Image (cartoon, rainbow, N blue to C red; front, side, top):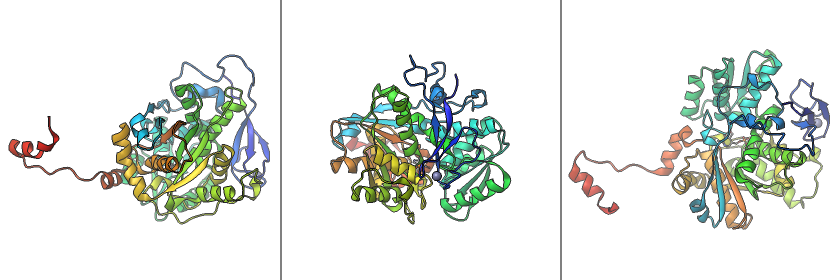
Length: 420
Ligand SMILES: Cc1ncc(COP(=O)(O)O)c(C=O)c1O
Ligand SMILES: [Zn+2]
């Protein structure tokens, strides 16, 4: 199956370059690039699906990499989409679905990006792959690189949750715990990659991360059998949101579907740069902004949801465009609401989410209460990371077990109120 990848386009100034372009960002204005395709619009049959594959490369006709013998031998994607009626009721929603991307090889959504980035890196013949991460993108890259014995160098803030650092080390990456924030780690990684000539997987900066993430849109369409009204995405850098939106747009541009969903950006109040930019544009009346003039102002992020704690969103413009162009919305929620959402998701739907992932459900509840999302609309809420990634936060939200003396009498007394 051939790839229809034909080049790149700048999100800000619209400048286009061909598929042979070897850089990462727009050569004119240094903003992020998106991958372009020459779709065979009107081609018969399901030309975009390789039915023999049960991972993200099932959609290889819509992806920018062709040499799948270079792909990791791990199953990335094909995560479950669960109907969640009981959880939905809590927010007055009658058609709620949860997409559990905590079930990827390294237990987060980031495996989708890493899987495509890995093939791209190996196609370009580099020998080392590197990235900065709040934790998940790095542990994902380390996992995928280990599966093909590719050297991997990851920069994380030293405050990253212990489980994520353990994953990085177990997979054998070179791990640098930066005495600073994720944004500091990002800038360091950029400088080192430039000097060393390593493949730079950094979120947003590398246009192929979005291409991996867009596969969630294809799965949602296939699993649901239709396009939902809303997709809810917990957001920090904005790359997952922009990626999923790109997937729906690709489906539409390739003539596979007729409509696209609205994108709901869910952020922590303490890390809401993208939401702030969306609200500014909405206040100014929406319309068709000149994207080369739109700025996403940095914030000073402090949220408990470490994966979405971002000062300078690295795919901010693409994410703001996705929300606005999809007719969507942005909401922010307090950290307390994020923590409370962890046991709600677990008890209401059986899905254990890390704080960043739970932010999607907290944001969706707020959007439903505000009338932004309607009761009968079909909503897919993304759960982007497994709760075992950050058990300290989960324990804060879930409370303590009952301490019990080792005796049957004590056990019976303690269980009296539970009944038969
Ligand atoms: C579990 C989880 N959810 C959400 C996000 C946010 O993705 P993005 O930074 O692309 O907005 C991340 C990013 O690290 C993540 O790991
Ligand atoms: Zn440009």
